[in-house]
Image 1 (cartoon, rainbow, N blue to C red):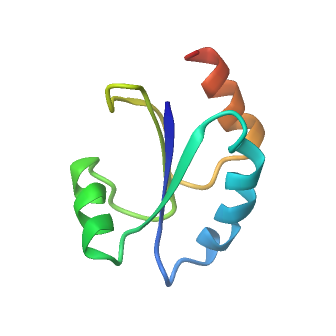
Image 2: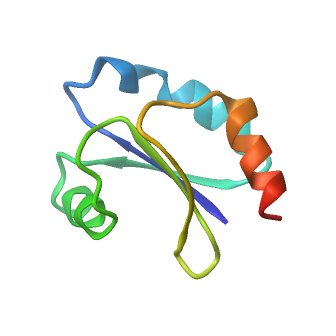
Length: 85
């Protein structure tokens, strides 16, 4: 499983992404994706991300297991990780 956290440079809510990463990194691989970069924009388009912050929990085959259109709490993410383990 992998947690993708889509952020952008002008997103006030995205400033809390490091705290989310710190809270879940022991349980799930995380990647912060800046949608303002070319690679980030492509990845966002692949998953139909239209706004930031967006957080996706992906399965091992890249399928979306859970998604949030705001930053979830670490507890919410960990609950989803446990549900899909």
